[in-house]
Structure formats: structure tokens, C-alpha cells
Length: 536
Image (cartoon, rainbow, N blue to C red; front, side):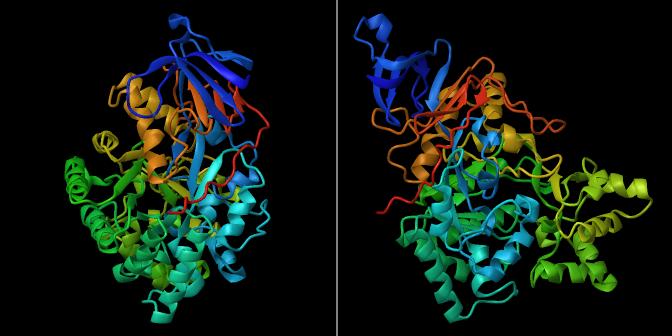
């Protein structure tokens, strides 16, 4: 007798094949029996300690968030309904080249300051690790959902080279190779970069290629936030593809989209580039979120030269009037690399969160709106906010295009990723709504994808990229990371006005065969653990 059986579920198994009716039995964290059309066939049905009537509901594999920023939230917030309630059973952390391992004491303090806007200051987390393996061990104490980790190239560079905008010496490159190899040996699934963020942005292609060779040798993949999503976007995509081919390294393009006015309607050019690479044998995949605005920190828009030396050096430059004027000119006239080579339009930059509650009046307003209210220039407002909040503000960047979003999500190498920043008074709703929005808006309402196609994008494709042999499909012997949802009602509750509203139509979510969401509510189960790279 099994632990649990779902009766008469409409199984969308993650393969992309048509749904089928079945009883699905679970025991000891795994799927042990699938009996198709059990009631109609008159065959013996699986028995279990608990039976759950799934009539009218879809049973699918748990969703994989291929681009998550829950590195601290998983540790600080045991509830973690932001992801669990969406049906996410696995998140990939360590994104955009900056996270919390491997570090020493100096680097940890610098990284914490640099990514406060992404993760918060972390004052409620005990940073009792320094290596990648120790961070994964920390997750293994029990978290809400499973998590995999990418070695962050920017953090590695900060640890070895510092925050200087220069080439690494041969000895430094050797040490970086060693650290990447060590992180992969300890269980990381690949390496990430943030090539518009300091200090990762200072690495030239030759340095990145050498690190990617190490990643490939260990069976991982490279996940770059590449050098431009704006004026140089197509060239930046081509750069990463060429780099991956040179290193013979699998490539996963982070939050793959085309933003800003210069790229409106240009998704077909990107997709043609991807198809050409796939035809040439490049092992390539990508993720995207089903929204048009982006989200990052206000400080991320600054030019790379202004970020050299780390957060304290940035603050000193902003405090100096002459240097701050140079920053303004790069932002507003020439187009800073941090703003993807496009002159900033302050009416598209909406402040979504601040660290200091005294600055709450800025939240929910664009920089241009706050500047008009104060009777000053937008740069004066932005500069004041960066200094007062010590680089802490997060933003929504309203620069995307719906037709590009839809075109990218149709691609055969596409997977889902929220890129969700969970902190701030008004975060991007993608943090709470990405996966039900795919199912509700883009499947049911718009028909951009069929239900079976969409579930494959969110389950088996990511599992294949992560080389997970027993996740991503509803199959006997596979882990029971599962979602039960109503295809007629599933939808994102989160909106730009109420970004933390939970989804509807997802009554049950299981991690390792245990309910983390039951009857629509969060249980106290912490069944999540680290998911480590499978050795070759």
C-alpha cells in the first residue's frame, strides 16, 4: 500500500505528449505506480493510505525556476510561499554572477553590500558557510523547495582579483579556475556571469572562455547575463554563443529577451541566431519570464567605470560633484554599459524598493515623477536616492515588448525563469506570478502555447539542462515533486499593484512526496534540499 494516490488525474507528464487520465501512486517520496484510465479499464487500482480525488485537475511535474534570486530568502523565510504556491519545486540560485559562495570574510562583506538590492542585507541569516559545498550543506538542513546552485563568476573574480577593472594575471586566472572546479566538484550545476555588473563585467572573453572550459570538463553549463539587452543585444548573444563554442561548453542564456526601443520587433533575429547555433551543434537553452518590464537595482544602471573598486568606491564617486556629472553624462547622453548602451529614460525607471524606510515615498513612482514632485532633475533625484540608501534601491524597468516576449517563449530551447527579486515594498510580480501566469494567460487565455508544451517548458526541459535523471517527468521511479492545478482557473494573483498576491487554481504542491501546499495553503513542511550536479 502506497502513501498517497491521486485518483483520476489528468496527467500532463512533462514530455509534451497529450494528457491522459490516470491514478498516480506515491510512496517514500517517489512515484511508484501510474495506472492509465484505471476506472474505465476496470483494472485493479493502486491503493494507498490516503486517496485524493483529482477529477478535473491536472497533475504535472513540479516547476523548475531556472533563474531565481532566493539565495537568502530560502534560509530566512521558511514559508517561501512566493515560490511554493506557484508550484515551483526547484530553484536555480547563484545567478547573474553574484552570490554568497565561494567567499572569504572580506568578499562576503563586499558581496552582501553589492547585492543588497537583490536579496536584502541578510541580517536575519547566519552566514555560517564560505565554500559552495558548505552553502549547499546549509540548504540540506531543510528549506521550502529544492535548490541548485551556479558558481557566480563575479564573486569568484572579487575573491581573487578584487573589484578592479583590469585583466586577471595568469596566476589569478589559475586560482579562479581552481575555485570554479572546486565549486562544481562540491555540487554546483554550472557557472553564472553578470556581464553588466561589477566585477564580473571586467572579465574579457578569453578569461570567460578559460573558466567555461573548466565548467565543461565537470559536466556543468554556463549561464551568462550577457553584456547587453539593449543597443548591443544581438551582438552580445552572438558573443556568448561564440564563447560557448570555443570552450565546448553547454550554454543557457539568462532571462533571454530583447528590450528598449532599439529592439522592438527584433525577436525573429534573435531566434534565427539561436536556431543557427543549434543547427551547428551548440548545446543551448534559455529562460524567460512572461512580463515586459525588467527588474534590477538602481545602481546596476551606472557605467562600469563608476562601479570599479566596489560599493564604497561607487558611493565616493557619487558624492563627488565632478565625478557624478560624468556618471550623469554617461547615463543620459552616451548610454552607460550598465543601462545596456541606451541613454536612460527616467520615466521608465520605477523604484520598487528601498532599504531605509524613511525613503518609502520614492517607492511606486518613477524617478522622473519623484523629480517633478521635488522640482529637480531626474539625475539629482536618482543620485540622492543612491547615496541616501547606500545603493539599496531596486527598480522596475519598463522597457520590454510583448511581441518579443511571446516569440521567445515559443522557442524549442525555452524554459521558464522568474528572475524574481523578493524584497522591496513593491517588487516585480514575476517573483510571485511567473508560473501560473504562463499557464493562465499564455496557455488558456492567449493560446501562445498548448498546455502540454508549456508544462514541458517548465519541467522536463529544465531537468534535462540540469542533467537530473529522475525529475521533470511524471514517470514511475521518478521523484514525487508534483503540482496539482485547475487548468480552468489557474492564474497569477500577483499584479503590479499587489505584487505579493498568491496565485489561484493550484491547490496542491508536493516536494519529495510531501505536501508543501495543501488545499491551497502552505504547510509547515520543509522537504527541500540541495540538488547537486550529477557526476559524469
